[in-house]
Length: 267
View 1 (spheres, rainbow, N blue to C red):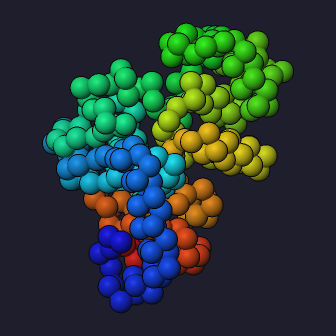
View 2: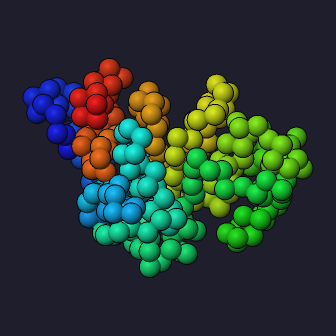
């Protein structure tokens, strides 16, 4: 565990059992895969000389679910954008399946699905036309069948031929989820994906994430809701000022412990 608060209190919140389970799980994945799916070393990013990420080091094994927590401006979104090959790091390296997110960006994009604050949809096209466009971009086999199936899955079958500009915020989020899952990515990146979803939409999101993981996927999500992080992730990482200040497996943690740790190390 990485933690910059009280050492004694951090031991109480971590629990020996969860740490041992995390190590055993990582060892099992190491034997199967040989190397992590995501490898980040010395990753830094600055905008106009303003540091946003400062020397991030992080690994994620195939089949793991990681939640990033932190205040606005902590670097969560920037980290996801680097992994999605939308932003270049200033220093350091990020690898997905052994491919460099800068040098091998085109290949990495085929392995990654992203749901961000911006839906990355074309408002003048219909919901179906959007998915068909991205299916062609990713070379999805039987793209029309896959697109129609996903529209049904996210509850937008009846809006398939409606222009995206006419959809509500929640419907846009559902369509963005369908777009991100269209090519069956190995790594799914969610930037506060539950935002704008009602109770039914949040339940759908959880079901879609479970299906993604059952298909052998890997997940990194950002959220401001510790209860959502506990529910959907195997490991929590907290960022502050572009640095990792806390890292722990969710097994054995309860909501009060996570909230206490957030208040203690993020403030």
